[in-house]
Image (cartoon, rainbow, N blue to C red; front, side, top):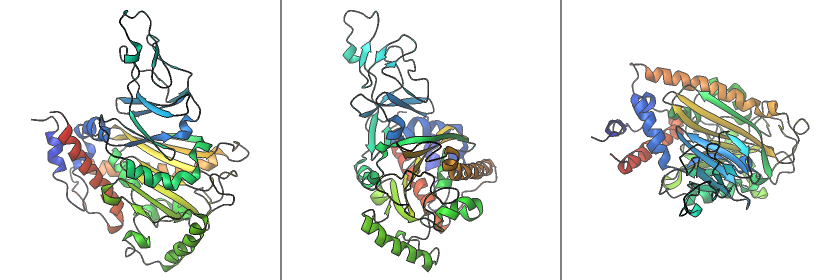
Length: 416
């Protein structure tokens, strides 16, 4: 019997329009499968080009025991390598972020260039060839400044995602941004529940008063006229606002139709008007950074939202960008990493206050952490039964369907 046969049995218990079986959320076996099989077979968001802004800057992305170095080379290209020395396997980069002229193993000082080539290895045999022992590469795609990696030997296609996302976020010019704040928050819930919580705003009216005062709830599973769920709400005022803004966006050259997981792909992109006259996603809706980014010379009352399965979401405003990624730490713990980006010339304390720029989403992340934990605790209860999704939870079901489909595909390729 395959070690993953119990997982296969659970996946076949999936019910359309309903949540997953309990064990797929809470069991150690499911966590091991997700971390070592399913998530290694798909593209994962790791960081932005702003996290590795200068040659020698590196960023370590970790998934369970898997550790990957994302590094910018002297040629300004961003590459990814397994964080494992080709000598005896020691971890090379010990810090989560840093800068180095070369990558040197702390154990025996094997030294690698920023392109992964082995430069120095002491006392090796005469027939040892350094060219055969460079760092092992990991597939990487730079999508408009968002860095995605895939740990599979044969990564799945990414061309449609790359074209659609890069087309819309190119105007924000992430190469000219820097990381102003990065938060790492451990949520006490399974990673799939953290993702599901993000994929709906069914809980927002009661759960996120600060967020909806500037972001609203439309476009997050309900309310957009073109997304097929306008029947969920009847808000002619919002529809009129969208139509009015579209003309402005078209004049600015930034309007695109909603892209919603097309043809089985794994990305969604929507430009949405902000609520209550807000010009950015800040605690009061007012500019969080005086130095605007991209093409913006005046505050603009919309934000571009990008979602990718299975581990990220991003919001692009006229003055800053906020990106989110998550990775499972255990069956009941998930790392949520949030980064706030501003223009590279913005001066801390003059153009922006780090505490203020992060305040809205820090508040929201803490609220969501509580909801996800309550969800995990309830699913762990023997009384849990697979429950039905509300109409406006269609993005939750889209994530669940992605997970089930990719998990089944990964099982077919997994060794017994």
